[in-house]
Image (cartoon, rainbow, N blue to C red; front, side, top):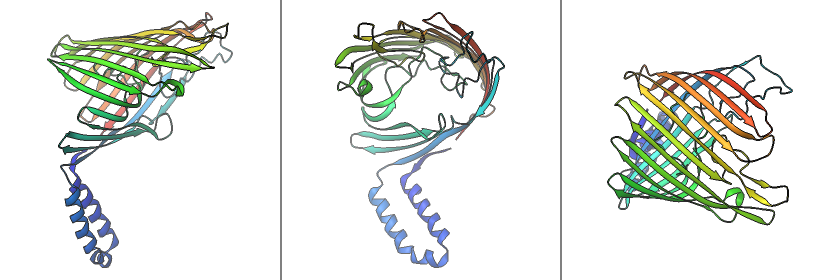
Length: 367
């Protein structure tokens, strides 16, 4: 793991390595360039440090039914009973696409710390930008985690996506975070318009944390346009966790949306009704779980997620449910070896239903 490397050391080290690679004659010719580089670094350096981190992860899974792909996800791909494919022979798969690389900087300024983050992975199969933002004091700009959810109630799963019913979205935004005193802080953000609408989505959150746990409330309002019509959209999130013991955490979330497709397992957020009128549909879901540390190196968790959708289209899911149960061993702090059983079930508005089970092993080495 490379963290907190001063900018001077990073740049001069790279320059020295380059010169040595050129050979003695070329190195002699480059002495003046190195001296110029030192001078330039001295002028630019202002307490900046650089960090490079990430992990390499291999996932190996067995599906009881059809191959559900690299992530069990929100169970949307579960085969329905009586489907034409009728594939119930099971499937085996493996991938390393969750592997991740993160680059960050931190600089002291007269206005507080200036930090930047760029993070990418290979999910689902190509290089993908996950995060790219900068923050100076209370103001963040760029692509970051939306404040629609919260980071206190995240399920610790081997599967990439985790339970249905949660909200975990990365999006471009302009965000303000302010302390409110006594464990409270507030956030406000503007995110891109839904489907290119002219009106952006506006969000606000209030968060509280203490030794016993944390509580988070978030709301979002926006608008969706289609065919010369528009409908208002909104979302609400409440999440909490309680530290039942020093080793046990209990958590739960509730998410309610209208015309806002941000819940894992949500379906058909907007559409035209039989009369040709634009309509925003409701979705409601959540997650409940418990995590426990058995020792300094072994932990486990059980998480239940669910979603209900009111869209009447026969092919869309009316309900989705998932259960994750795992045990994770960390033989050293930078390694996680986890085994997880995942069960999922879905029902469509047309009355069809299906269920599936996956056994997954994940091996992650961090740096």
